[in-house]
Amino acid sequence: MLDKLTVGRRGEEKACEFLLDNAFRIVEKNYRCRLGEVDIIGWDRDELVFVEVRARTSGSFASPEETVGTRKQQKLRRLAAHYLSWKFGREVNCRFDVVTLLFDGEGNVLKIKHYPGAF
Image (cartoon, rainbow, N blue to C red):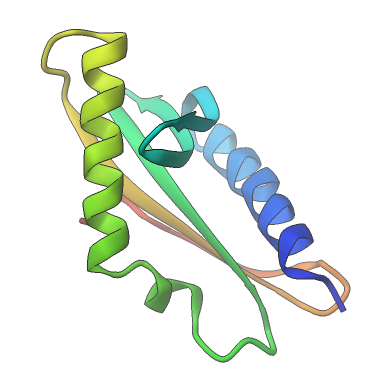
């Protein structure tokens, strides 16, 4: 059985692979500031995308999709505003995506889903 930290790291790894395979250009992984952390930041054509990755094992109580609530969305919006003002100092087209992964007990991906413009 995988521990929570391993599931999270593996989820981010697999999400990056998935996004790269789908023409994303990743510019930041685990961007951290005083407000928190964004898992992945990258470009999808002309949009800057802030990606939240949620990974669970098949035996978990809640599905990965159920774990991105209103508080998390608000936090990600604040983080994105901070990142945009720090990095660009101007408005940029952006969106918020969620990538969810479901692993079996050995760490194999059972399902991966991408939700562009999730919120």
